[in-house]
Image (cartoon, rainbow, N blue to C red):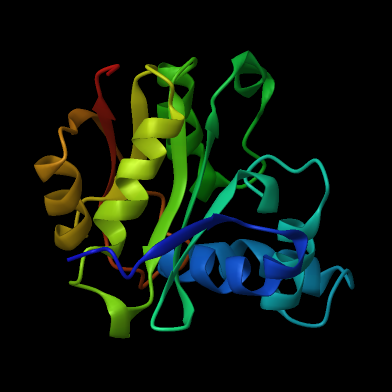
Length: 193
């Protein structure tokens, strides 16, 4: 069923697509973070800033860490993952909304961490997310695999649960806006293969 799905390593020229997909994966949280650089004059729009960040040569979570899924002749989705090394211990949250996620990440140092996994809405439900997730598990090279998702993202929780992930911890999200929907960040892990 998923034979028509092709995976490929992202290239720097995919930076715009990666920014869009990372923003969708985060339900707009990424563009909210990128907006600070718009206010500081670094870029004209949040997505332009996201594109710049995704195109950085040595950025963790940028194009070098991304795998693109293609289906029906178009980019269909992305998974962005990397080994979560000890350097995360020295990272301090500069924005309150990122504190809970950073604290959760610090509990899984040494694991393969999936920072983003997203499929465009019109291509969901045909196995692309599962194929990207399987690829990330393979890339983990026998390490445990970890990720963080929102407690109200039922589709993601279901996908990860069906693929051997279980909840390891959760932390209340710090809402970026007063009227933001309340939820928790859920750290999910899968044992080493």
